[in-house]
Length: 265
Picture 1 (cartoon, rainbow, N blue to C red):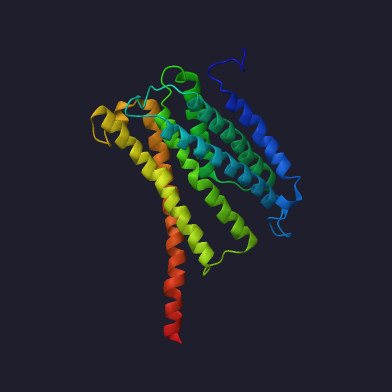
Picture 2 (tube, one colour; picture 1 turned 135 degrees about the vertical axis):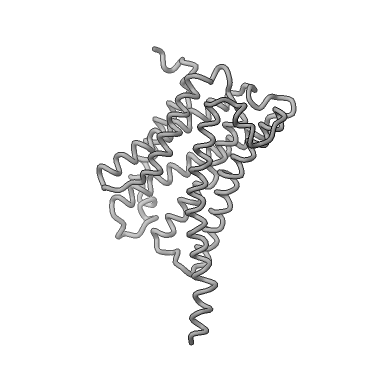
């Protein structure tokens, strides 16, 4: 089998599987990257930092390319499901390559440091399986550029999430910090817009095209898209509720705990 010339294996998949691990290794050799964390940070935390930087680079590429795809196509003239563009398999291949190496990181982290997230692992495996199915079964027949463009925007909140982790690791964010409240609010709003509202808007767009309601749209796009988008939608809601709970706790500590203290005095 000629992998490089196979229409179901985009160059971006090979590139992601090659360049992201190389970037990970390079980050571990740069002293200024190591200096991002406090000197007392252990090996696991530094390893986690390198992975988060790779994730932020990947998310930026996905978001930028996804936005370009959505804004450069006249959807009033081109069908949202069958319009062919080279950017669609590029984005899917890039996402699949990234998630594959990041899932390998999750397994290594569990084996080496004894830590890991079952929810993240489940999310990665689910999207990997969906991406593989897409590349091997749908690339030639139904590229679905609108879906892929919208799904790519879900990466928009990732750099903010990782920036918050870096600040917390450096000890610069604490309960009453204005910076923490600003970053938490930006993360919660961005996450909701790109991962929950974006999923809903896909239903609106598909429904408008087919002449049905947004909640009926998933039934018309095939099981392959319905299962993937519905699973991701509910998982994103769970993540957002966790973020919202943290945000409410932060606001409560700032605006209510202080007042109670003053009254007590």
